[in-house]
Amino acid sequence: METSTLPIDDRVQIADFDGLEGYLRAYLEDERFRSEYPAAYARWSEAAAILYDEDASEGIFAAGAKARETLAAFASVLAGGYRPLASSPGSEASTRARLAAWIQSHRQALGDARCELLEALLQYWRALNDGPRRHSHDAHDVGDELRWEDARRVVVLTALVMVEIDRSL
Image (tube, rainbow, N blue to C red):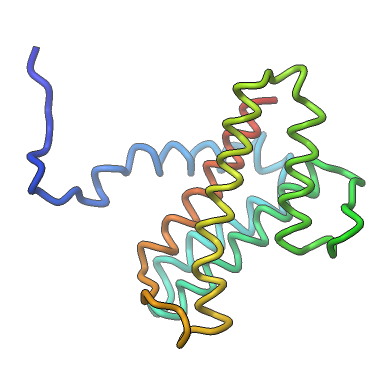
């Protein structure tokens, strides 16, 4: 059986991953998802559009901000009235706390392994979001320059977090 592989020295192209990004987009664009999470879908769509429509440097920050708003809107629907005491409702810490609380409240139905996966996705999302946020607040003190690819990762991972949580229900 012959498999298609790329030699180690060839660069992987963005088009090689259209299948995954296309799947995530199709899942979020489905009527059921859009009607259940309308604000999250709208903000995610804006973030995705910003990546391809804006000036590259401005788009990186704007897409990251929209991705944070996206997950906050998604968490609001999932967590309902749960509001962590230490955070303002729209803050990133509040969003993570609300999603973590939702995961914990469904631990028995989801199982430990699935909950650990969802928690790890949230931690990865936080780590990706920290980079653009640090740059926007204090760009001259941060070592690496942000690239378009950094914003793409945040937008795609935001979609992945929502899809994986929604599919876990």
